[in-house]
Structures are given as structure tokens and as C-alpha cells.
Amino acid sequence: VQRDCAAVAAAVRLASLAARGGDAEPGGWARRWEGVANARVFREEHFRRLDYNFSAVMTRATGPLMVVVTMALVGWQVHAFYTLALPWLNFSPGAEETLSWVSMAVPARLLFDYGRTVLTDP
Figure 1 (cartoon, rainbow, N blue to C red):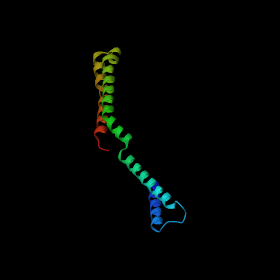
Figure 2 (cartoon, rainbow, N blue to C red):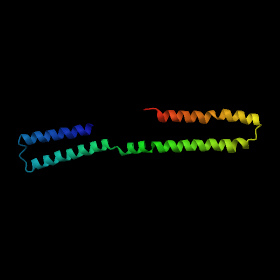
Figure 3 (cartoon, rainbow, N blue to C red):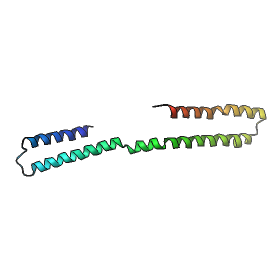
């Protein structure tokens, strides 16, 4: 913003010099006009970057893909725990059922917090 203000101030100074007739040096008006043109190009480029913030657009575009990938990863880990790790521990049926109910709270809370974060408007 400070750089923009400096460019605008330079353009105003150059325009006011041109309105007064400028200075006596040869090519002064052409040099000032070139400065005004450069300031205009800089201003247009600056506002184009603000309007089309590509990194922010890509972040928003890949957001839903990241949600799907994260949910699939959590689901795969929960499936692996219940089908591979829990039977491998060789607990009694009562202890295995209790552990499965207790360990169900962790992925449920993880999915709840992740869903709440995704659906909450910043």
C-alpha cells in the first residue's frame, strides 16, 4: 500500500509539472510521461494480483479433496485397528468388546472435530 501511495504521489507530481510547463531540460516531458505510464502499469499489475490470488484459489479448490483424503485415511486406520490389531491382541470376548467401545470414541471424536472444523465458517 505504501508503495502504491508513493507511485500515485509520483504520478501527481509529474502531472502537475507537466501542467505548469515542466522544466527546461530536453526530453523532460517524455521522461515524466514514461514515469506516469510505468506507475499505471504497476498499479494495474498490483490490483490484478489482488483480484486473482492464485495460491488462495488453489487452496480453496483443493480443500474438498483434502477432506476426502483425510476421511479415507481415518476410515482405513479404524478398519485396520478393528480387523487386524484388535483380534491380534487375543483378549477375552468381554474385554475385546469393552475395548472396541472405548476405542470407538477416539475416531468418532476425531471425525466430529474434523467435520465441525470443515463446516464452520471462518
